[in-house]
Length: 207
Length: 207
Image 1 (cartoon, rainbow over the protein chains, first blue to last red):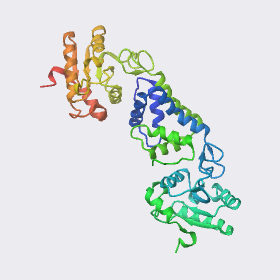
Image 2: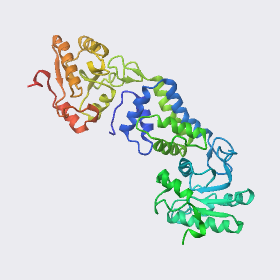
Image 3: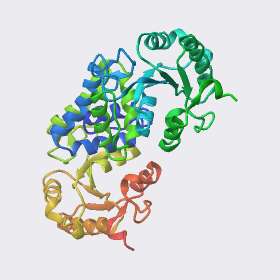
Image 4: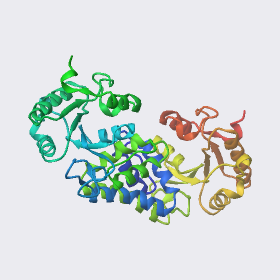
């Protein structure tokens, strides 16, 4: 496919741009580009600008570190949500996974990763200090640890649990309905939803 | 997934735009958007603008009706290609399929479809008159019919062959190495390339 000659450099360019995306091959890229070519000009403009605008204007919520349009994100600034419960997750995809279960009405705290000595990621590289500070300063009554059920997730759970212990608040983990060794984002919604409902006290989760 | 709440409307919008594409689900859309979010701003701008520019500026070659940046496309205006041989194809994807085989150095003629009474597509809806005119006016010595090996493709082959017969030029079809009933765009490059090399005289192709 390397010496492929397109009749149009505009087409070639558009296919190349699509094919840069992970998991999108040149055939799929071409199919998608030809689909876009058939759409009204206005819609193609909306398509292209959606990503440009996202990249330019996105910011991170100063409370939970989730991506946001505003200084404080939609979830954190929603008064109908339970501000006393904070669910700690690894990344923004996990926020969406938990949101999809529709079982959780509290707030989030996005760590930006998990402790992983193999990858050189320590507690200082994550939003753990800001979590402790947040719990100290705000009316948080329960912290739910919703990290992946891997070695790294367990390590991070322990680390955060020890940091939170002096604050005397309830610390729970999601029920181990999520199969051991699985990444959170691949869990199905029912399992993940149930694991939020059946969360157990952190100190009991190893009995 | 219907009541999914994103923390950012920019993100939601970008995911929605991606999910409009055929074969792209919401999970894939989210994965691609999060990938784009990690790229430099300049690259995301190039990505978005590639489609907008393509849609705005694309035109159709006045000779072969393939999509083009200019009035006459790259292939038709390339002096090193064989201007005496014209390969007739259904659509622009088929041009690319044949180009990929690197077995053909002539020019193309894109019909814009095939004769299909079931879909209400007759000869007048296709670029057949312009093909006859082109062959009459220019120094074309051979027309290769490279349509899908379906009923509709055969019908279109016959129709064009009858129209070309009075002009006394060579009319060939691609060898039936492409399995009967298959769409041209799904044929592998080796089979398709060989079917171009082993093309047979149209009048002999039914013996």
